[in-house]
Image (cartoon, rainbow, N blue to C red):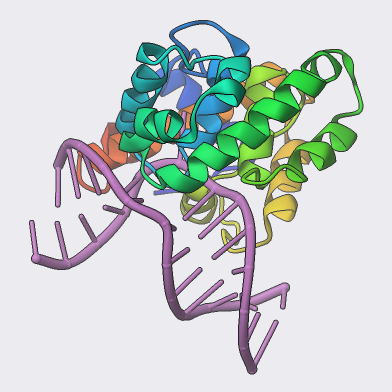
Length: 209
DNA sequence: CTCCAGGAGTGTA
DNA sequence: TACACTCATGGA
């Protein structure tokens, strides 16, 4: 297993896995991406899909509907995603933000300012903020998650323990300022992690390195 | 049965 | 800044 540069690993991953078409979104509505970013916190994506189905079946796959819904109904709908008491609260907070700032997030080019605003929302940490801004609003940010830290250590010769913003800067400065690459790269890292998981530690891609 | 999954918030040293 | 602890479900 060899150490690659950040751009070289991207080329390898893309050649092996191809385009990932992220963010996974059935409805095609921006809000589903935002809600998914909250629901997926420390939770398997299969469970997020159940929670999204629950929201849809309850007529709650909508920011305004969530703000108007009874607390018990919201909790029940997202229950399969776990941590449903706090995630219900977080969803409301993000829904409020979404209704107030959706237009601004789409229009503004001041990505750092938008990020600060999002980070002020309860339940939105760095990874969630960057996921929302990149995948729902096409802002140029790189998402760092647990997978990224492992890959950084294992395939890039970096310290996966370094602070979030610092590791993010490594990727942002090593890559062209291209939203599509940021989008694809993170999705490819997840694809690699899932393959490695299924095949017990080292799948076809790892062996091909 | 145990372990963990596309984290975040809070409290402590 | 660096850890430990909590939140909770469902699949491997």
